[in-house]
Amino acid sequence: MSFWDGVFKVLFGSRGEAAQPAPRTVPPAPPRAPAPPPPAAPRPPPTAAPPSPPSAPEPPFRPTPVPPAPSPIGGGPTNQAPPSLTPVPPPPQAPQLDATVGFGLDALRAADAGKLSNAQIDAVAASMGVEAAALRAVVQVESAGAGFGGDGKPLILFEPFWFSRATGGRFDQSNPGVSQPTIRRSDLGGTQEQRWAKLIEAFALAPAEALGATSWGAFQMPGRYFAQAGYGSVHELALDLAQSEAKQLAAFERYLRANGLVDELQRKDWEGFARAYEGEGGAGQYATALAAAYGRLARAGGSSFLDSLVAESRAPLGASDYAASAGRLGCEPATVQAVVTVESGASAYGSDGRPIILFEPHIFSRLTGRRFDATNPNVSYPTWDRTKYPRDQAGRWAQLREAFGLDPEAAVASASWGLFQIMGMNHARCGFPTATAFVAEISKSLVSQLNAFEAFVRSSNLVDELQRKDWEGFARVYNGPGQVERYGRLLREAYTRIAATS
Image 1 (cartoon, rainbow, N blue to C red):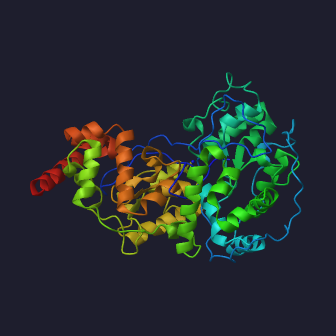
Image 2 (cartoon, rainbow, N blue to C red; image 1 turned 90 degrees about the vertical axis):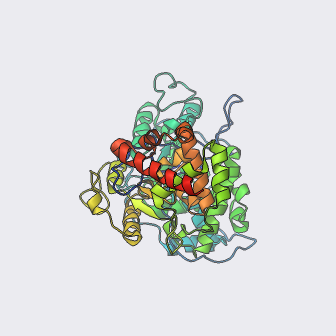
Image 3 (spheres, rainbow, N blue to C red; image 1 turned 180 degrees about the horizontal axis):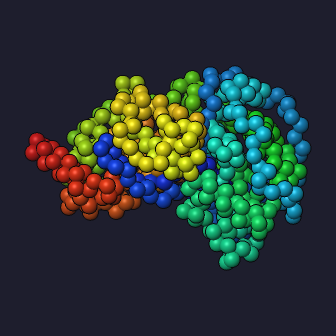
């Protein structure tokens, strides 16, 4: 299973939809070129999976995304879970993947594309004596809440590391894009199209092993966990989870009961749950992401991911904050303040505590393969058009909500956020595995946004430009090549004003 396309800030997420990078802003500036998306790293297998060879690295934690169903928190925890509503056969000691799979990948389409309802999640949570917010936290971290893409195919993450292990490395040389002996996050695929392409290639080589190396749906359940989820084979798991989000929820419940993990969710023992579901290698980060997601959901009354993006602190950055950041970057405090002035005018949150955003429909169109251009022209169109942008935050958040209902990760990746107006698709440059994880973190405070900016500057090799006050060089990377001279002039003028009054 892959966890948050890393970990988060929320969502904070497992392995799922991904995004690409490159910040942007200044309203009149044209769209900036995105950077490659970072994928999530594979998680170690549960007890039913074969042991790792001594040379195999411990896979780090990482998530993916989608949107959680809103609803109030369910019944409180109890010491004992009631009997399962669905019989769970005991998993064998060492289940093996089937040698043959009697279906093609085209068969994996939703029979029921309906979202999980609040009532469904509440009912399963109550049957286990778990708070609904705790169950929803897992969904948020794993997928941000959706089990399918807009094309009706299950949300997946194919992991070349696990495919290599399942096939004894025999395709490492011939098919390095889908079979790798080590974890390479950059090769996980940044979009669902890319991830499905990897699965299709691997499926043609070794069908069952390919399905087992893939994580599926809203809970991003690894195919190799099939026996623990109550299935006789990995292809039975794939066919069932491809039917509906309700099937995905039922499989996850069976997995929890079969593995004795109900108690961990009742007690909100995030680390205990993380070690079993994500693996020892990424347990710490995964547990932190789950705790953060649960906290946000509890504060929001169990509502959706977007509703949970409210600042924990709106305290403004002070002179000491800018000085400390400049010291870490080796530049003048006024240079960092100049970026803030040009990007957002020092406004990071609206009156409701949500980050200020600018949603970019042309980016969303590109990230989703243009498939919503005809049906949702307000949030998806192929070319940048500044005249179509809503002028207020209410209109921009309305766009984001509409897009989020179509493709959560792509929607969050297609907006620029907060004080530094960094686009969600730049999450990897800021140190996050998914756009939803990035957004969940920077929504908390201005200090979180400042830290993300520093990470972006370092990973984009822009430290030298800030130190030398090479504003055009900084603008070319930070805001894209469209209006380098104009953006560079605005930065220079802002710096001059700030430096003169410091």
